[in-house]
Amino acid sequence: MMSPPLGLYLHIPFCRQRCDFCAFYLEIHREGRAQAFVQSLIQEIGLSAQQHVAAGRPIQSVYIGGGTPTVLATTQLIAILSGIRTHLALASDCEITVEAHPSTISEQDLVQLLQAGITRMSFGAESMEDGDLARIGRPGAVCETVTAVTQARAAGFTNISLDLMYGLPGQSLEGWQRTLAYCLTLEPTHLSCYALTVEEDTRLASNIQRRRSPAPDEGLQIEMDEAAQRMLGDAGYERYEVSNYAKPGYACRHNLLYWTNGEYLGLGPSAQSYLDGTRFGNIADLATYDTSLAENRLPIADRIRLSEEEQLRDAVIFGLRLIHGIPTHRLHQHAANYGHAAITARLLAQQLIEEDGERSRLSARGRLQADTIAGQLY
Ligand code: SF4
Image (cartoon, rainbow, N blue to C red; front, side, top):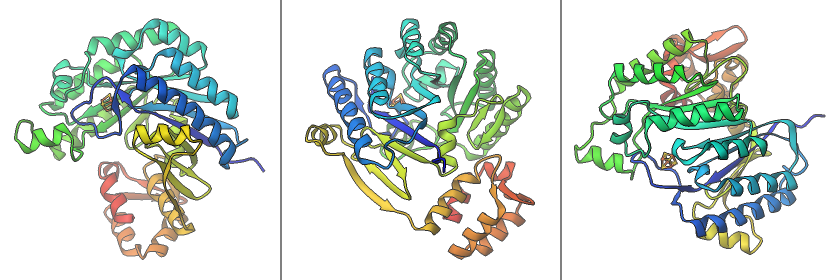
């Protein structure tokens, strides 16, 4: 029997500085710490290959995220890739993504990454208006995004994604539409559009509390979401998930694994894994991570085995976010398992979830309330 697809996520926990809205686990980049981390990560790849059920299974997608992977030297990224190839089996058509902040990468880096087998570049643009970037404490300038995309294409990358955020402090609907229109001129194959959310203990949360920055306006975010759906749809992008749009054939294979409850191995500090019905996560502390690997121990901090009902719950909640949805009988099975029949009936009656015979999915209106609906079905 063919084994189900398996993904590999690597968390590179460094950035040059922390953006105001960011709550990810990361450290400010220092060369010495980064070099030690690269050694630890390669050690973790080797140990994982020996100890997990992942061993021997071909990996269909690798996602190098963070943090900002491209604060590492390109030679360090290539060394990590070579560690993966030494210890794990990559499928011949493996999708290999590197996330990059546009100001941390040069044309030469891009040429070397392509030659090393990276198939997909994902640039964190966030906005195409410099004022928006300044108001969220995001380093870099719009012209650097334009340069990075142009250079990636010149280097030979044919699969380029841009990450955007909307509902930023001071951003108007017209400003968001200008950002989308500018992005379209760059012709990415994939766009992720995330509504700004305010995470606890971030500079943004504190700015809002002190009234130095306005809180996101939910009504405006809904209008922005609708504008993105309209403009990107008209430009030939398919909205295949709540926050993700792609030209036909360019949906992100790695992210699809998360939404289809597929299996993935996450390496690096704070990275999460889901294998064989078990969720487990690494320690979110670089020093402890390094020490653990120096002692030849995997840096796993917590592990939870999911029952069959819990696996179905997660498959339903993630799968409803997809345009293709899930088999309808699974939605009703989950409702029966968790006593959610009345809630599910209400969501259907309100047309937040739609059924067309054999498949169920969030409706266009339901996608705008995806997180609330997930909370109700949990
Ligand atoms: S670049 Fe990304 S990971 Fe780094 S601080 Fe900013 S949002 Fe967070």
